[in-house]
Every structure is written in C-alpha cells, then in structure tokens.
Length: 501
Image 1 (cartoon, rainbow, N blue to C red):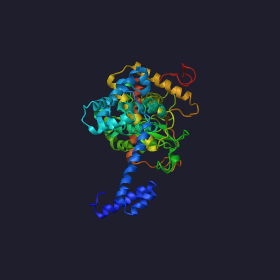
Image 2 (tube, rainbow, N blue to C red):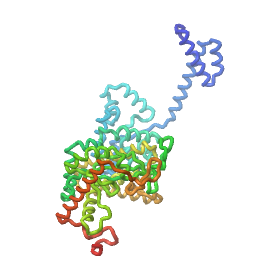
Image 3 (tube, rainbow, N blue to C red):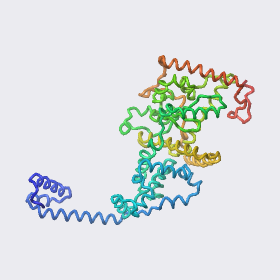
Image 4 (tube, one colour):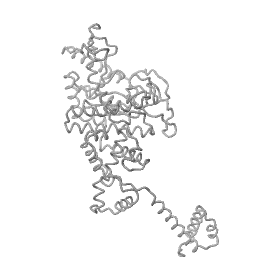
C-alpha cells in the first residue's frame, strides 16, 4: 500500500476496507486494521478477491451455453403462409420493417445479423462492441440480433407466450419481456417509423383531398367531403392499481360491458389507415365525453369554419353530438323515410372504422384477452398495435396487393381467433368491444347526465351541421337512392321489408 497518499485518503481507504471485511464476515481482519497491520491486510484482501473470482469462474462453467440459430436459417424453414401466421405480416413487410427501424435507431443499436457478422469479421472498427460480443459468445451465445428481437415482439403481440418464445429463440424467460418492452417502447412507438398525428393531417391539404376522393368513390359520390370515420372501442385491461398506476379511482375504468377497459377514440380514412387516436380515456367514459377530452376535438372546434367552407367533415355514429365537422345519423328514423335512407348510406361509409377494428383485433392476439401490464405499458401496447396496423396498410397500398391476399389474411387470422376462443370458453367478451351507448361518468366514477349549456360556437357549429346533413339527405333523395328492401340480418336471408314500408 502506497505511503505517499494523504492522511484523509488513507483514513477513507482504511474505513472502506474495514467495512468490506466486516461485510464478508472477517471479524479478525477488521480487528487487525485497528492494530495497524495494513500491509498484511492488503495482501489478505487481494487473496480474498482472487478466491471470489475463482468462485465466479467455477459458477460460470455450469451456466447454460445457448446455441442460437440464425434468423435466416429459422425463416427458411417457414412457408409463406406459416410466416404470415407467425408474424402477422408477409416476408417483404417484415424485411422493410427491419430496415426502417435500423435506419431510425442505427446499426449498432439494432444489431442486425449482417452487422454482427461484419463486426466479427473485422469490417467494423469497434473494439468495445467486439469485446462484448466475444464475451457473450463465451458465456451465453452472443448478441441477440435485431431481427430475432422484432420477431419475438411480433409473436407476443400476435398472442404467443413468453415461455415458448424463450425456448424457441434461446433467450432467458424473464429477458423475453425485457426485449418486448424495449422494442415496443423504443422501436415501434417511434414517430420516425409511423407518425399518427391528427393535427398534421388536418393541415395537409393533399392527404385530406385523397381521403375525400376515396370516400366519394366508395359512396358513389353521396358523401363528398368526408375525410374520416370516427368511433370508440374498448380494449380490455386488468384492474388498474392505485399505487403503481397512480389511479385514484380504478372503478372509472370499469365499463358498462362488465370489464376494465381503455376507451380508444380512433379516426380512419377509407383505406383503414388510422390518422388520429386517443388512448388515454377511461373505460367508463361515454364516447362523446372521451371525444371531447381529446386534443382533436379542440382543434376541430378551432377549425370548423374553415372545414365547413371546404365541405370537409368526419362521419360518426349516434353516440356523438352533431356538428358541422362531425356528421351523425338521424335519431329514431322510421323505415321508408328519407332519414332512414340517409342513415343507411351513412352507415355504409362509417363501417370503415369498424372494419379497421376487426382487422386490428384479428391480427394482434394479445388483444383477445385483458392486458395485464401496468396501465402505462398497456397504453403503449395498444399504440404499437395501431402503428403496426398503419405500417401494414401503407405496405399493402405500396405493393398494390390484390384482394385475394386480403382474403387469405382474414382466413388465417380468423381461424387463429376462433381456435383461441374455442379453448377459452370462459371469456365472456371477445376481442375489442364498441364503446357506444356507455353510461357517462365523472372522474370519480359517478353517473352524470352530461347535460349543460353549450357555448355559442358549439351552437353555431351544430346548426351548420344540421343544415349540411339535411342537404346530404335531400341529395340522396334527388338521385333516387333507396336502401335495399332485403334485410340480410334478421331471420332468414331474403326476408323483405315490404310489411314495414
């Protein structure tokens, strides 16, 4: 031990060693420090450290060495149908997703198999990473590639179990969820990968014109000006905790459907692409209340006059209040009336958002049963499902895939969903449930009637919405469109409604 150190530093080192020996149970050595036998104790301390190091080395010999197969060899064993069923997307979409994530976070963070191969061959000058990879190869099999991490995350989102995936990909059981959370929070929920922003959409004239053309084309020109379809749906979660989730009243998340849920407000275009979502609403909230608490509501209230001049509006169901920017159906419309015809064609255009919910629900099996993570993580998982849905829609549109592939996708995912509920008969509520007609509650969970004196701006917007809806109703009548006289949803097929008219 050096004698040139200062008196204070020597005393500090003396105290630390004494405490270390006491923690190790070496009471004799601790007493020897008081006898000022520091040179002897220094040697004893070094020997003790060497013994601990030898014990660790012997323990490391019994550690399980993992021989991970490469991602390329694993995916080559799967057919195209199996790959789609495993990872809920086709090979080209998965490859593009890996490339986009690698561009966003960097090669060293993603650690693709090509990057690991270049690192080991010396084509990448990074001694620190090489030493880490060499140490892990000697102990646990080396780095886990970014493709495997993403594949594991997609399997968990598709409904797989972490224990089976840990055996399949040769990872630790608890480390599987560590990978899952990291990929969801830092890779998928990255605005550089998929950005869902309602404000940007409402300020992008080209996107709104494209949405208007799609809705007009699918409705034969009846709903010219529709830029999106709005609806709310309930995603089942476990009961929020007061302490860890910081929820004062967990009962405010208990929906009228009989389970704890998050009320998600979503607006989609005609291609089922989500351009706005609000995932923070409680399950007991009415759809209209949840919509009023969202940021898009305030933005629409500010822009409603400009949107009215352009003739732009969103289509919503009867759970929402009629506004110039939000077109809702007529209440209590009788069959055979002009209002009934309007409601039919209005529903035919609004059903796009229901189809989007169905696609998301069938694709991501993690939503088939309640999410039992922390509330914040549940919200991030729901957001990741929506972002991945948008990524797949964009890929599908870029590839111009025919309808046959969509039918194959529905068959594959629908069969998986049916099998899941066949072996889980005790689940009372399947998948995602619509949130309309909910009981309105305040922050404490008590029922409220939701009535109140509207602002003047809201009144003007409502009056303009009434006029716009009447004009659309009259246009449908002028063109001579009538709803089909065959009811396919009551009793036997081909049952007509002649007795009602």
